[in-house]
Image (cartoon, rainbow, N blue to C red; front, side, top):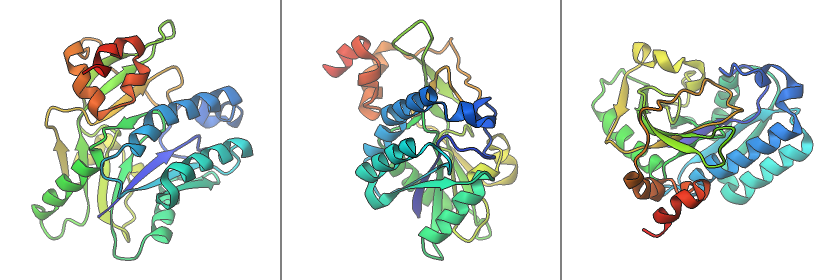
Length: 270
């Protein structure tokens, strides 16, 4: 099974985004917005993929064909420098995101392949053991399904919301538990199949597909909440992460040591 991390990056097309920026190029490609998106991408998504224990995955980033050339080069250089031939930046015209990903998969991987298509937004992060755990759990679950089940989903329900407030430089952390969340949501399917995570409403996954919701009480993703989120940013203020949990979190999400600043001083020492 081939893990393929699929990411939208300032893509102007149909992909489930509902933000104002997704509907207006002048907002989507505003220099200040692009600078902030790239900063978040490097700090969270990019670093979490660079530090994966299992590096046997492919990264496909879908962006707009008319993304400003200098920014497209910056993005492509980053992917090339850190992922080499394991990464690809797809600058594509407006359309349905899932079709561009399907086309890329079929042109990039051999017929007969089984894919693990993983959703990751450019401002979120996966735990360092995510790919390894996904590969193991998907393989075991596949053996328990009937032969006619050609495709299935894997959902990691537990994560952490990293919440930036306008008046605070250091984010706050809140526990998150949401089955079938889009973060790290993975579709396992034959490459010939037309199903793609971006063509399925994640809240309806359980109605249409066999699925495994995995929960070992550890967080497997970070949902970063900030002023420029492209989708609804929901978190529970009644579920703060305890200080005692920070060392374990930082071990699997090393970027937290940087973003928490002085708050993480005790974490770095452990």
